[in-house]
Image (cartoon, rainbow, N blue to C red; front, side, top):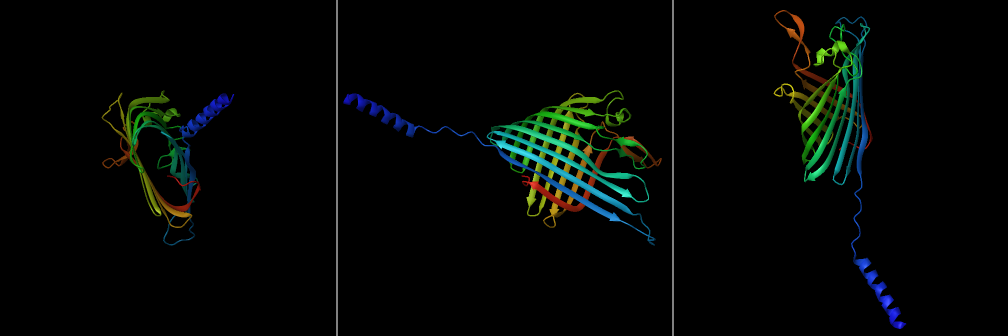
Length: 301
């Protein structure tokens, strides 16, 4: 009996010893979130009464919101960003508004780590505007919500040489141009009876940012080549956002947008005939404002 008790005690002691030496199971990686909202609003007003030097009273308003939710979990990254901006200029001697800014942009990038600084990736983009856009004389509508709207999905690789630079190459990218209003479809490359036009090609996107004390700037350059139609005609989309903080809640911002798409017709001026006509060309927009800025949640990384 004593031998049996000693044997049982020896078994329990051995199990306890092995239990102490056995390695603990690895914990599942925790999700690390970076999410928040940055809002900016700029306002100016000019009123004149019997002003000898002349001029026109006007009201200007610019608003912008950047909503972001980025998560990292083990080998997986998922970045999401929604940009919404609207601005207008209203002259008191006219009964309509002229848009100064109008954008609704959603970007999403999913990546799975394949090697150091290299990810397999899927990149999605959607871009349109909120309201009607008119020509310079405010006679003809030339854009509207979903007229046009662009959406794309690209599969490829993402290389991040530093935490502030991302280079994404998607050799398999599908892009759709949608124009809701029939009268505007030919202006953006679609046939009159074609709501959506599909393109298949390769896309290169470079994102970079720099932050020094109270100054930060970010830029995104997108190049797209359509395999199915004139692949040598590269489409260009280049956005730059710069911000310098003056105080805790007030900042100076500069946003520029450059677009070249040979399917899109833009207003051009013929210096010989002194007439406006529609043709291919570079689009450029610059918006400079001083206003109130506040971030809800975490600062964007």
